[in-house]
Image (cartoon, rainbow, N blue to C red; front, side, top):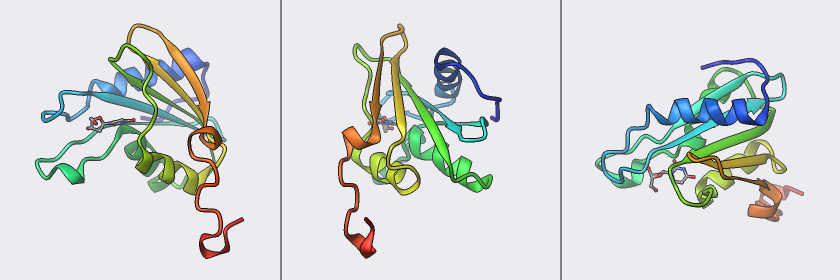
Length: 136
Ligand code: THU
């Protein structure tokens, strides 16, 4: 899904809509994500689980992969939504993938009942890959 630039609440709403497509028969834990690019376009993702559990893709990585496949590399914010009591924070694998493209990405996490929390990727994954292949 591609949408024009939007307010926080609209970005969260795009993640809510994407969450409805989650394929989560093993955990029954549906997650939606909406990634806003620098040019304002938005790509969404949901978690896609697999019987071979380790192949599961988180909503955030699906959104990032979809955006990259469409030629996008510069991201501004990502909204993540789950039906939890407190807003979730992305798993370590997703943090690493976010750092590949935007070490200072803003993460907006929301519950279905409207609680929100904002992080930067710098807070969640400081010094991501510093030194590896001479990365600063
Ligand atoms: N999951 C996500 O999609 N994003 C997160 O930030 C946390 C976890 C998914 C992976 C798995 O399908 C389910 O939630 C339970 O971990």
